[in-house]
Length: 90
Image 1 (cartoon, rainbow, N blue to C red):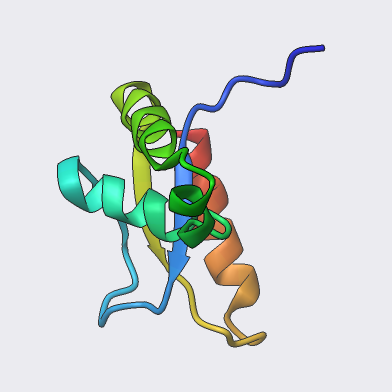
Image 2 (image 1 turned 135 degrees about the vertical axis):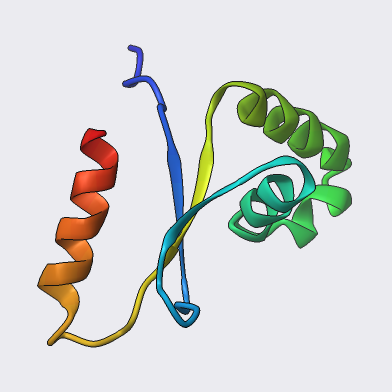
């Protein structure tokens, strides 16, 4: 069984003043993906820390990463979701 291809990664974060969708590159993209790795502190304990690093490097070579300013405000949810949906479609 094969999954669907991964075309983009969106990292939801507290918005900056203009709440833009910003492409992350290089070390910033790598750091953002590593921050989202579940239980990454266990990678070293399982002696697979290097595998996680290598996997993320391969991933970032072909998949763009974006940071999305996202407010926890239900009044703004529809607008924020539409903005994200527009970005995905372009």
